[in-house]
Every structure is written in structure tokens, then in C-alpha cells.
Image (cartoon, rainbow, N blue to C red; front, top):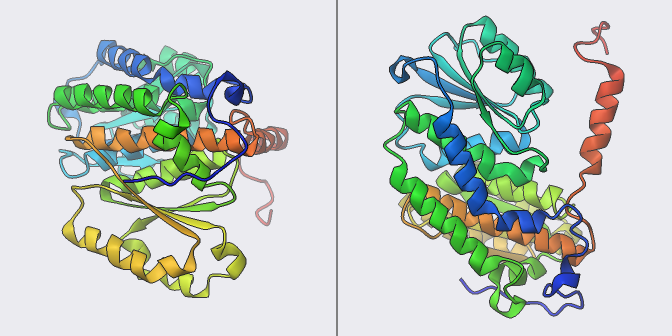
Length: 371
């Protein structure tokens, strides 16, 4: 597609443009190929004390960036998964999890309280547990309990560790023969990541950099991000990156479901919101024909009620490569938008304040049922 460019006074070229990126998140995206290789090697090396054929189903327990990694994996392979695979974002495990369930405990920090709670329940049920983490209680206490651990490099923001959390999930599913063989998919995906860094990285001038130019179109806008099928979890990833990196509100929805409810709300869109709403359609060339028609027809109905509409299509042969093509673009766009807004993309103060308050109030249920 052709990306529009808006004139702006804040430069996105040269080292001074990236001075506000205190944690080096943009440089971290540039290290994505190394992260991909390290994560793959770590997951292939971990010893699993059970035969692959005993697994009847899979639960991937995680929150935030760790959970979206699971959603992306299941979104890419939803049509070819050979066993049920579910993402669990909760303190409680579903009742169906048993001693033949592969439970992947996915927590970058190793201290996510929801995932730790799920871990204790999984061990009580003698589930086949494996952890993907950089440390914390998940990497120490549960390792001592016999849970195999796929080690992840520490010191990152969880959202910046997506590939380090996502690639082990792919390898673990592959090792248990829960997908068709993934070797060729992983190689194409790695090449896609490298191409994205080369095309959209900070060293590429704005005039030649679609990610930088696209970021300018979001200045003063509220992104409404739509996906479908493979791109449905991508819409959630883009939303989260706009929230955490650019510090702006953003919303994600999926077709065809939104055509059964959300579409009606556009008729009553308040003018101030309409003037800020930027609709982003994340499309995929392999989407169902009816989904493709729905994107076109729904756009015709709602575009008069928003300020901007941008349609972006994934590129690549395999599903994983097409997914990572849009992951990388969304990451770069949200980070460049943070710089345009004059904010450091790294800190997530609202999340930290919430964690502090939770720690002050203690863990567990309130003794007062009315509280």
C-alpha cells in the first residue's frame, strides 16, 4: 500500500531523534533476529521428561505480552493444530486440564501472579508443565519442583520480549507434533524479521521508511484496529503497543464479529471522537473470501464516521511469516509515534502504580464478601 506522510516539526531521522527512547526499545527491535535465534536454540535444548505422544491438549498460561505470544501462535496455526490449544488469562485453570495436558507457563518476569497461581494448580493436577521465563519464582521455585524451564534473556520490558516468548511456544508445539513440521516456517519467519528491520529500522530515512511515515498519520488520532482470522490477534498486539509505547488509547476488534454489533455504534459516533478516530484494517491475502468482502463493505459503511482509514495487508508465504511481517510493522510504528509525541516509550507508570497498590493490599480474596 501507499502510506501518506504528514509534515511535522519533530524529526525521525538521526541519533537525536531517538534520545527519548531511554530503554532502547527501538534498538531492541533491531536485535530481533538474534532474539529469534536464541529463543529457538533454548527451546530446542530443554529436556522434556515425557514422550510427545502423551499430550492430548495444551493450555498456555500467561498475561499481557506473554499471553499475546500465545494468541499469535494459535492464530497463525489455528487451521492446522492437531490438538486443542487454549490461552489462559486467569488465576484459575479450566476444569478440563489433566495429567495429559501440556501446560506452558509463560511469564517473562517469572513473577506474574496469575501465572504463578495457575502453575500451582497445574502441578496439583499432575499436568505436563514447562515454563518459559527469564527467572523469578517461576524460574526458581517451580524449576526446583521439576518443571522444565526454557530460559529467556532478562532485563527487557515484556512487550519487547515477544519473539523470545513466542518462538519457544512454536518449538514446543513442534516438538510435541501438535503442528505440521515447522522448520521451513521458522526459517521464512526469521528472514521476514530481518527484512523488516532492514526496511523499517531507525537508520532508514523517513522518506524511504513506511513505518516512520505511517506513524505520522497517527498524530492526534485514536487508533481503532480491526483484524480477522490470522490478523485478529495482531489487532490486539497493535493495540497494546500503541497503549504501552505511544501512551495513547487504542482499541481492537475482529471481523466478522464486529459486523454483528460494533458496526451499529458508528452511526452515533460523537463528532469529537469521529475527528480523532483512525480506523486501521489489518488484512491478510489468505483470509476467507467472505471476510475480504466484509472488510470492503464495512469500510464503505463506516468511513464517513471516522477521520482516517488505513488498510494494511500482510506479506509472505507462510502464516507465521505473514504474521510477523505485521508484528514488526506495528512495533516500529508505535515506537516512532512515541517519539513524535515527545514521550519515552519505555516506562509504563500506570501498570507499576497498580502493581504497587496490589502489593499493599495483600494477595487473595477479601475476607468481607461484600468488598
